[in-house]
Amino acid sequence: MAAFLGRVSGRNLQISCRKLLSGCLERGQARTFGVSSKCCLDLQEYQSKELMKNHGINVQKFQVADGDNDVSELVKKLDVSEVVIKAQVLAGGRGKGTFSSGLQGGVKLSKNFDEIPSIVDQMIGHSLVTKQTGKDGVLVRKVMLGEALDINRETYLAILMDRAFEGPVIVASPEGGVDIEEVAEKTPDKIYKFPVDINKGITKEQALDLADKLHFKGSLRDEAAVQIERLYELFIARDATQVEVNPLGETDDGRVVCFDAKINFDDNAKFRQKDLFASEDIAEKNPREVEAEKHNLNYIGMDGNIACIVNGAGLAMATMDMIKLHDGEPANFLDLGGGIQEEGVHQAFKIIASDENVKAILVNIFGGIVDCEMVARGIQAAYEKLKVDVPLIVRLEGTNVMRAKEVLNELKNSGIPVTTADNLDEAAMKAVNSLST
Image 1: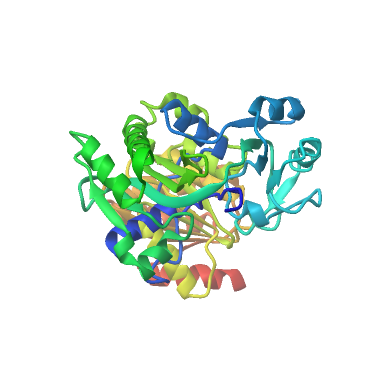
Image 2: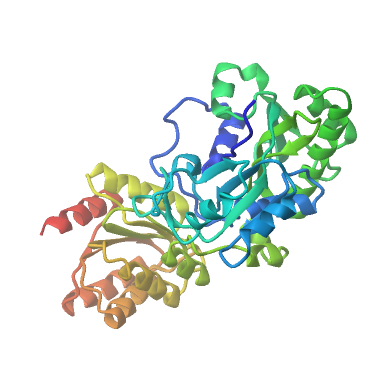
């Protein structure tokens, strides 16, 4: 088999794994907007590999070039016969991407060590455009130089927290290195699910059983079981919500190696995993997302022109769906959360106002824990301080809603372009119509 080039897992891998567990494998069942209410920690590939290596998990030897170090010296340190050169970006499709330097492909193989510095120079400091980055691409700041290995056989293994099983579940298949959803759809008998007692942890017997299911033989069976145990240990020790390895490969020289992994972490465990979260590279993140996190707001930017401010992820999804139903395009997902205060509302508007593509703002609040009057006061303060001049459509329902409506009437009387609505359908329709007036 040709030397492994590597794959970057997309940001919807957790959705894929959960579909495997639930059996919902038919295409098109995902919602229109594949977003979560939390902005999860994303690690670059080299960071994930470093984390795995520190937990005794077998990964390819690698070095990281950042433009300041000597690439030739890094290659010498690898002491390998062939090098895989991989641009470090948080987007899929690297191998088929294009650099602003003209270089084709963000993943390269080379046995000619003299050419590697030139390849790295055409990656670092240049934008890489892939199917997941958008037309402007992502600026590459680091490149991983790794050991290129031949894989005799590829398997799949994932560990994730699952509500239905009330704890960790290991999903495994001897058919790795491919789209795991296709495997589950065409050959579901090749997908195995192993619930793990979180109090006892994975047992040696379970790990060996998994190794058997993955068709590892002889000494490789024992080594695969050790790797599975260590992956589970990482999962628990680092408060992961998912560790997906695709492929967990068997090399031609008799090794079991984790070639590619996507790891998701529980943001609620940030206080326990300070070193991990401090290592996050935010350079590729939307600056508005970074600012939102500082104020405990959940923000995800989109390509539309109607901004959405809501409380609750479900309400956010419904609001965006309704905007789409009325032929509009959401500009963002912004969830204020349940404990929002007036200053948080102000910060939400400040983030929204910084997006020049926003031509209307739809506020949809169902006040249970949240006080509608407090939200209205926050809106009033935001418009007065920020001088926002785009149309504002507000639908409020729940705690102190009548007092909130009095505040909104004060806004109307002061000349602020605010429109109220009694329900979500009406609010979405008015938000879309405001773009043409």
